[in-house]
Image (cartoon, rainbow, N blue to C red; front, top):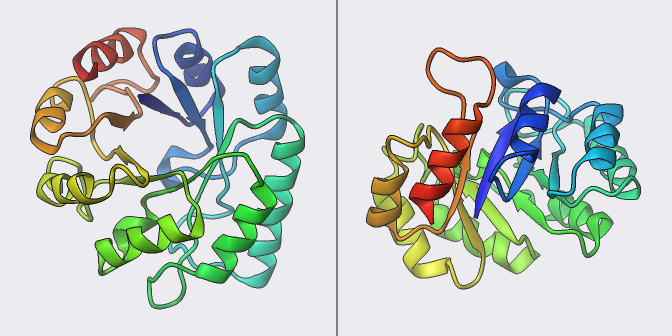
Length: 220
């Protein structure tokens, strides 16, 4: 499974026309992905059939949120759910960088049957095995991770361990600098079958169809 992270409408349209299995739609690449524009999402749903997962994140920086920010997250999730979102991507930590079980559970309950991915806030936690066991227990369908490191290549040993132990219980979505130049090595070394990439090459600004095609072919 290949998911393409799209930070603006042009890349989203390109990816939805491509070989990608689905997109993660968000805003603000510099902040690492925030909740996207609702009307842009509606445009994508009207014009494309591939699944669109929505990032629910009100601000950049730490993954701990004020009560007001958390209310905004819940409101956003409900709004996008009613408009036909195919999945959600979010992750809430407490002040100690541990999984906030209560708040994440609230979000999962609101999502209902719509699958939820816990994003790379996971990599901020100290004990990845403890954290992934918590996510499985809470009911997340997937976790996006680079193995606790800045990139998937740096975290490949940890990814290999997580995939070996937990991939039958939760989808482990390998992300963090994943490109056509390294996806084959990551696949063979870690045993991963699910990948996440922005498909933006070094000197580009937007997703490229050719890079998505290479990523899909090399990961299959």
